[in-house]
Image 1 (cartoon, rainbow, N blue to C red):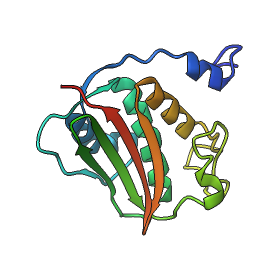
Image 2: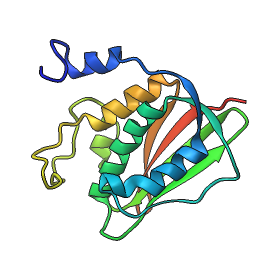
Image 3: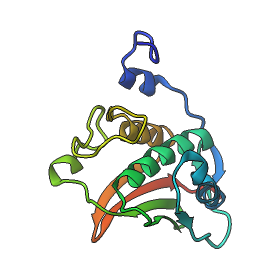
Image 4: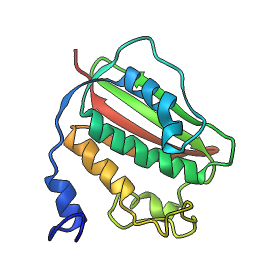
Length: 170
């Protein structure tokens, strides 16, 4: 109630305004990798692409999306392993992938991880946080939809990858 007034968290997020502007996704990912340590997330790496990739997105909403995913990746990866950011673009879309080594998403959770309140009970909370509320990936999905994009998760051979797909602008 303190954060959302009389609205539920889901209602508050659904009614939030997200500006759909122009964003250079390549520069954004480079900035994330260069500055993740300020959010307490070390060893985030990005191999810069071939130049600007302009997409329809809001920088502040996307920062929130990426921060939620990076914090999850940081919790699940073995110490010292990198979180890798990559960028792929076609003529009409661009996708940023955030990948970490470590535990994969349980089959029974995979279809529900973007729902409000869904959290992995087997993972301990970071120091200073008493619990996971299951809001981070819900926020990420909501903001991506408001920007006209999508978010997907998949297990890899040695971890998890989240892909954020955007409409590419000319």
